[in-house]
Image (cartoon, rainbow, N blue to C red):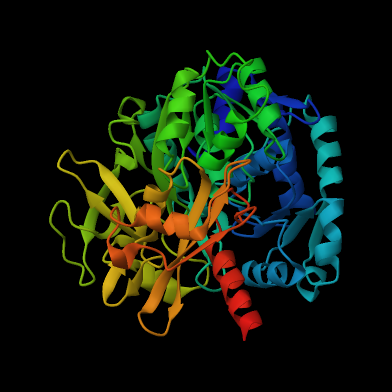
Length: 508
């Protein structure tokens, strides 16, 4: 038995303990049942479908118990899971299928139309409908199946290929190894105090590292319990947090804002929750205070697909005192803050965040150019600009790619956004750099107002005057009904730039 086969261990220690529940169907799997089905499918994939260690298995489906079964199969067999975003257009899926070259694709019927017409789909040797997998799970979970785990792959073998969002070009497949899986779980557990008694709700899509590696895989490693949801619904999440007696929950600030506005917010009992884990972007102080008044501490942090994703954590006791901070580095990671020449900057100065440790990706799938650009002398260059305060707390200033230069001055949109959030009428804000004939680039702020609020762009500009340097004040303010988001709830600045460019073209 190889040391990566976590589920087989918990099947011995806690055979009847429920490991996973699927909210929408009510289906559950105990650790023994999960191990039984994973053993069955490992035999089926290798002996019947003739898959072998290193072959890629694409999953195109909403969150389900079967994702977790396939994860256990990957730990036992060395197959590599490639969860793809089911919301992508056929052209985008075609690129990722061609790039990953899977030997098996598992799809839900409702997404089959998006891929069935693609040449890349036609040449895949093995295809399974998710319903077939569901039937196997239900029919085989109570039978004692055995599988001799394969021993010809090591910790540097990939368990996932996780495609990045592709905001700077074509998506890249980050290699996520068994080594990263283990050390990310250890880092996460040490900072979040995860035990086998913990319980969580997980609604982040599993084509994203957050859907796998913030809660589910560390919880599975530690024999804990996860209730999977296919999609986020604020009212249902509130209800489940109470009913399932959840101890932790991972979200982005937008999700917590929607939950706080739910009619059920004041009614639910969340006394079982130790804290919420927040990532993606800084959480505004008013929203932190709303949840603190509810008795739910806020635990913020920082992560990225290529490193963990668990990199830093801000203890809940520092949520207000160090508002905006991502906290301190996690246990088994090293970091530096460097300038463009790779030299370490002084404390308090802004530089690029670079990382080294066991949970750093070895690179990108079949992309040596991208690998060499990100990995230099064992350090991973995140592309995020950070600073460190006198107490050693880290702050993300902005993405390096988000920073723009206006009249020779570096401008960090995140700094402007943080200030604009202090305006009582603003619900959401996003600032981007847009082309300008005089200054090269200038800021444009997209604003979503609170319900019933009204304010003019000129009034917003006046609000900034005297509080921000003149070159930081956005030249344009545009009030819109909704700010576009990615699948994980993060603000999509690429979409905002496209909106701006389309409006410029119309004016021409």
